[in-house]
Image (cartoon, rainbow, N blue to C red):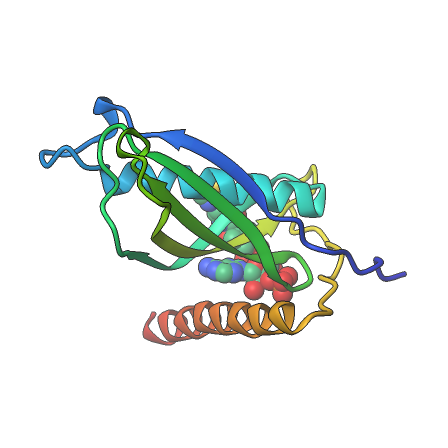
Length: 161
Ligand SMILES: CC(C)(COP(=O)(O)OP(=O)(O)OC[C@H]1O[C@@H](n2cnc3c(N)ncnc32)[C@H](O)[C@@H]1OP(=O)(O)O)[C@@H](O)C(=O)NCCC(=O)NCCS
């Protein structure tokens, strides 16, 4: 019996950039941001599927703004596409310089592929995503593209072996 379709609910985590998170330019070290985004994706995948999930691949990551020490980040992760066991998570990072009362700016967007696993570590069947609105349909197509790109890369790697 197939599982009932389910709505995606974005999750938001907040991080503050401390000196130990920074690089030589007093801005946020990219690897730290990647870890925070990966963690937010994990939580979105877990909340959606009810299973622990693993990062299968990171399809793209664009840094458009450099968060500085003291800035506050809103990291918003949403499931935008589902397969049998896989989920594409879109993560948007908004940065705010709260000390100078600046508006939030989009600092980074990334797409993470997660796979739900059962207690035996086998990919587990998850509910299909319920896609209703125009925006949800657009995000679904974006997520499908991300999943297709990952599959294409794996096919190419397999051919080269
Ligand atoms: C990713 C992983 C779960 C795939 O397992 P597998 O047994 O090869 O799985 P399958 O080929 O049956 O594919 C299962 C699903 O994963 C997806 N998948 C597999 N590799 C993928 C990749 N590199 N990127 C995106 N999706 C991937 C498949 O498309 C499939 O999706 P679907 O069920 O929605 O159709 C497995 O390779 C793994 O556990 N890797 C290590 C993950 C890890 O340690 N991450 C870092 C720490 S969390």
